Length: 162
Image (cartoon, rainbow, N blue to C red; front, side, top):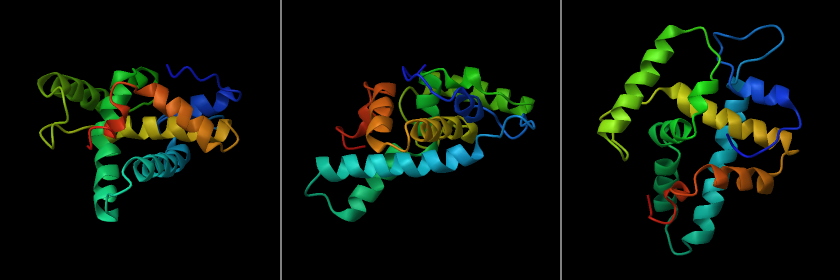
């Protein structure tokens, strides 16, 4: 899935556990998603800062937002099959994911609001990033290595400018 070998497999289980599935022996992904969101924003900001030395702060902010919006993250989650590992007890999520998959076929690149990405897909990608960050001992560098292997083809749209 990521090429990263978790030392703590419980983190991986937690990263894919929706609140509807949560049990006494496994937390939901919400805390890891919170952390992963911040880590991803930091990593993307750092990348843009170094790549676009003459770009104004407002432009950098818009570029980062375009790279980490819900649809972009949901598409990345689908591309890597992360939805297959989602543990939940909410049938509505399956329908939302299926509808999004159909929409991606109709709009192969970003739809700019024409399709509705399920937030759960973006959440599990961010929670996976959070889990990797925790498992690497909070290493931004090691986390970045894994993140970049997730999507070499898009390179998080950094080189194309959004």
